[in-house]
Image 1 (spheres, rainbow, N blue to C red):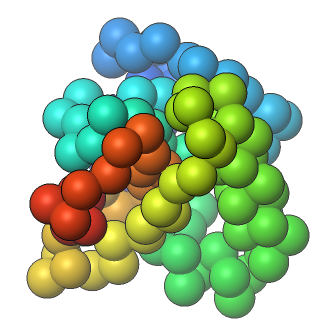
Image 2: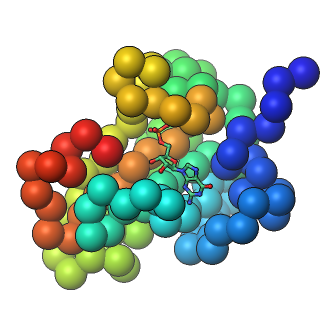
Length: 116
Ligand code: 5GP
């Protein structure tokens, strides 16, 4: 059996994090190492999907929910509602947690924040 992901452990309350918002299938937290003035993570509660390609193939409606939830959160947490949505996909692209999640970056972005 594989170890639960860091996000599953947060959801289960084993690792402290403020859940900013949730739906029946998603939750949102602040990234512990923010790369922009607003840097949130939108995470499916299920750990079934390693990355965005798996979600898109298996459950496109969940991917649409992630995008809509990111938009809603950006509206609440930034002045202008604008945001970047980043899915690092694969270790060589910077993915470190293999439980799919979207980075929501906003609030006065600079070019430096591209590689979330
Ligand atoms: P990835 O590198 O897989 O695209 O994104 C994983 C993200 O999770 C990183 O940006 C990292 O800062 C964040 N992260 C890792 N551990 C924790 C944690 O314990 N709490 C929170 N809030 N974020 C975390």
